[in-house]
Length: 310
Ligand SMILES: Nc1ncnc2c1ncn2[C@@H]1O[C@H](COP(=O)(O)OP(=O)(O)OP(=O)(O)O)[C@@H](O)[C@H]1O
Ligand SMILES: [Mg+2]
Image (cartoon, rainbow, N blue to C red; front, side):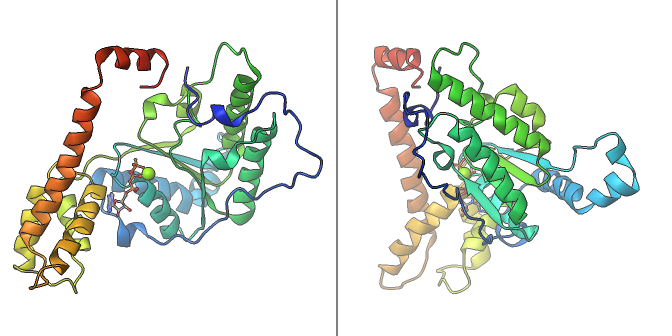
């Protein structure tokens, strides 16, 4: 049984907040910096799924009122999206960009914002959060949502477990009645409780970028003013093939590593060698990390598994 980041925050015995405890604002709604059209490179399949989600928002009146679907689906006016897939594939970026394209503010919530050391307060915090999102017409975004949406505990033995279950039950109720847009993102979708899975209207799977997407991500990062040693198109094609199997984040990180290399040389131009060497650094780092974890003696791995730590 693993409660991830939730467990350490609750303290049994402290079951009432002091009378003068002030209600904090969980997170403020901010204006998104990105849009889907301008800042994200996604596969045609993900774009099609996002378009369908947007159609539900844009054509709500047509579907529910003109076509009369509200008669059989009276509580269907909210929309719950789940972005899942490997690290660095653009889930967090897309959440902000979707809000940007919809011209709505976004409230990004972390579990730490919701936790309270007082029994019963975490559930109240969740209810208040949904109210705030409704009042501000903001997109509600739960990043790294797997801990929050994890399987509910069936054998409840401690107050702390009760608190976690109560919080998840409140979240289910709020999701059911919310009329706005909620987005969850995770790279551990298998941890989601099935009760949450069935309340999510759109599951959108992110994948590592293919050739075409990598080319476009590189093209965006090759900002016009960066001096290039070779023809832009040639460099983009080479960078695309050198970065096969890497994520959008890896590509962005490769540029972050390559540009200082270029600026330190007398020509002050970005070359393919700089990019290649940056990509090698990134691949080597992955290799070193996986070697380090596979060199842990087997009995320690077994112990970690038994403790739910792996
Ligand atoms: N599809 C993409 N299009 C454009 N840029 C991308 C894409 N994917 C990743 N990036 C770049 O990598 C950065 C990190 O991506 P992001 O944080 O959205 O990944 P993530 O899927 O949320 O990863 P994690 O699962 O680790 O949270 C982005 O801010 C952007 O610079
Ligand atoms: Mg993310």
